Image (tube, rainbow, N blue to C red):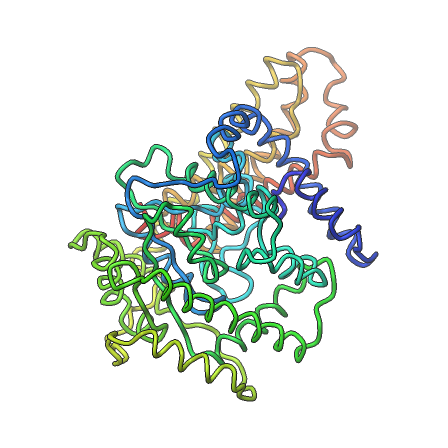
Length: 516
């Protein structure tokens, strides 16, 4: 929620009556500080689109009917939905939300370039819970957009205000919501789907959020029946253990303490069983046949991802040819064999065994064999010629930092202002140039970008005060210590710049592999 605007934070804190303990105040202050910046950055777009969106998605029955059937990935958290989503996103005929869009849904049209660049220093290259590749341009869950746009999501109660889980959990199924809350979710879901799809005629919208598992009927209504579903399931006990571990790993992002493992497990089992049973019931009631509902097993997707992706594409009306296969295989070859985290065995739960039987019955007609095939080769080893690419990347970092420094000097000379904040883009330019020329980053290239950035800063310290003053004033060199070199906000911008240089240049991929 770091990029959620201030009005969303105000609504969230008011709903919980500000019940955030002192131990979390620093964490809350940091989140609100980034929210202030995001609010200012996205304000122009919000103001420009407010009237149009209010008219376009007016009333309590807002919907978005796509020109081509949308595809929604279903399955509870930790069932393999992310792996499937990433594979589908490699298809050239689909459009899917990116993290920079989901985290700032109100403003990504006008500010997406800045937000994507600004996010890099603060986002890891992999997700903290499982090491899966992650970044501003990677496919994202639209539920984050519903949350950061209209606070219409179960996410606040899942890991932010965990004592309020029952309150926010109603958004998983949309049952128990007031008419106003339900209308808020519909408007946010329809508006975000429209924004992501706008200008992408002929492409199929692909969405993935585990919370959608309990919203099949509502999604069918939202898209006017123009939607197909892909459901993926995994061994129930593994799903539960993985969710407990995920909550523990993400506890550092919470604003309230999590319950103990037994209570957490019980809560997850109840929610998991309820979501999947609701999916089965609504799929039957809607009469979803093979043309609109595809079933996958997690084990089958991991063992034979290309074969399973082909089956999904043919079922949902997406073409399958050498281009599609090649893009998927580039992704698989780059990220390596997908393996979910393994956790210690826990006690069996009869509810989970019953759920697995119900899912098996629902999958009747699907090949019961676990598909076997060669696992894709791992892509984390250094490719041939990596040393030469690093050298070229390091030289590109010097060129990028120098070019950014030149622009900084021109701006300073033209305005008579040092623009300390431009220390940040110097690092971003150095790191971005390095990874684009090298084609693939690592920690060594990241260090090279940091060194190039520091060299540019050293040049700026000696010359920038003179440039900003028009090269006049005999005492301007003394200002190096009192103005530029002192302990002031310049150091903050320099730190951001160094982080940006390292984060950009150490990214494994310039863009998600296979996703043009």
